[in-house]
Length: 250
Image 1 (tube, rainbow, N blue to C red):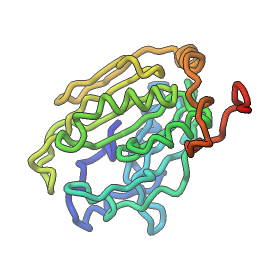
Image 2 (image 1 turned 30 degrees about the horizontal axis):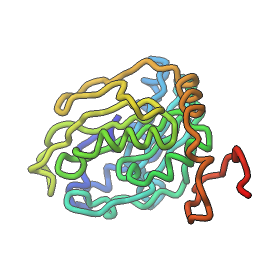
Image 3 (image 1 turned 45 degrees about the horizontal axis):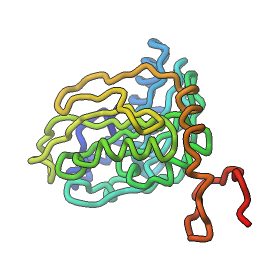
């Protein structure tokens, strides 16, 4: 589901009354999602506005197929711009980049603006992630021209499945009142070649694709060796734990 999915995109406004929308990770939103995950034998990534004591975060909970709360990721990079007053509402995440071992595959999370920072995708891959979900709330005037290209590049660069999720429609509030969330949710294969499924720009819908996670990623890893070819002598440094090189330079 999309970023802070259970309400409007309130960071379009600057209004402290929205602080009361925040809830703990055992609050009504996560509890309800746990019930649905258990009922449908489905792993669910549920983005919500989290309150942890006096601290507020843009968070995504990961619920396993039996309803177990596996943990959460807190959005790391917090933007500030027209209609995206997120520094007013959210602290930067402090839980790092966890990988969740779900009933079906190993999952990593990035949230919206995080996707512009490619290092995190590669770190998640090194930690075992096979799919990275990116719940988003982004509008046409900000990112529509690069949305599909960015998803494909992130998948290619890290050799894993990337799922970009976005809101649809106009909410008519704050500095975003005259623009629209353009949807176009995507599932991209780990070669970065193909968009396996694509949502519309203006309809609420389920976007799905049937994939063989293990075989597809193995094929992508065997096809490319870009990480092993990085040259530290040129100042190109690896952000995650380095793989064993194929050869040693003289």
